[in-house]
Length: 379
Image (cartoon, rainbow, N blue to C red; front, top):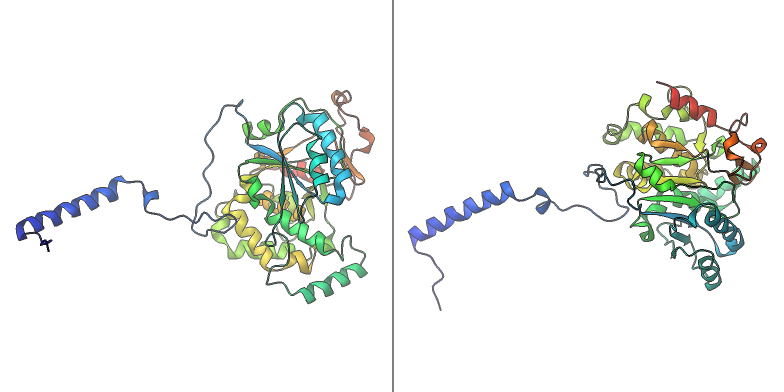
C-alpha cells in the first residue's frame, strides 16, 4: 500500500500554501459564492434586503407585461366582451399576452373561445389549494358565525366564502402564480366591464419609462363594516416590524394622507378600486410587502371579517411608494358595475364613447379622487 504521508519540511510548506490560498479565495471571490439565498417563491426571507432596481433600459425596449384575469368558466360571456374591447381599444397594436387563472380547471370551450378573440398569446392556469382555501390557522366555525352576523347587517357578499378566498388570493397570491414569473408589470381585467377610450400609446412602457409603480382610475370608499379591525392591524404591523418601516418613504413623501385624515389615528376607508389596476409586480413581490401581507393574513381578517384586496393593496401602496410612483389613468374610460370613470376634457370626445356626465370622480360621499389629489399636492 503506497505511503500517503508527506515528509516533515514538505508537509509544513504544503500547510502554509493552503492557508495562503484560502485567504486569497476569501478576499477575491464574490460573496454570493458563499451565501445561500432563500429563493422559494412566496416565502418571506427576513434577512434579505429589498430587490435592487432593474438596470436602466432604452425607452423603446419591450416590457415584460401581461393581462391578468381571475375568472370562472361560467363568466365566459362577460370576459369575452372585455377582451374584445381591450383588443379594439389597445392590444391589437401591442399584443400583450393574457394570463387566465381559475380555482377550477378551464373547460375546452373557455380556452377555445378566449384564444380565438386575440392573436396574442393566451395562457391558462389553475390556482392551487395553498393560494385558494382556508389556511390551517382559521377557525371555520367562527368564520361561519361571523358571516351570518354580517348578513344580518346587509353587507354585500356577507355570506360568500368564495368572495373571501378571492380577496385573499388577489391580496397575497396572484403575483406568486408560476404563470406570472416572467413578467414585470400587469393589467388586471374583469368580466362584464366596459372600456370606453382608444389608447394610442403603450401603457406599460409609460409605467416603466416614468418610474410608475401603481396605476388606477377609480378611487372609492370601502364599507366600514367589512374592515373594522384592519387599521388597528396595520398600526400593530408598524409597531412590530420596524425593519420594514425603516425602508418606507417618510409620510410626507408617500400617499399616507390618502388613507388617513387624522395622521394615522384611523382609516378613512379610501382605496383604489382594484378591479382596474396597472402596476409593477415588484411591489407585491418585495419582502416588505410579503411581510405586510403575512402579518395581516395571520390575524384571520380575510375570513373573520371581509377584508378586500382593494383596501389591502391601497394601504400598502400608499405606505410603501412615493407619491411620484402613482399614476391616475384619466385617459382610460372604464365602467365597473354602476360606476364609471369618463374623462371630461374636450380632447377625449373623439377617443371615448362614454358620457362625461356619468363620471364618478367627484361623486360626493363615495369617490376618494379629491382626497387623492389633495394628498398628492400636500408637502
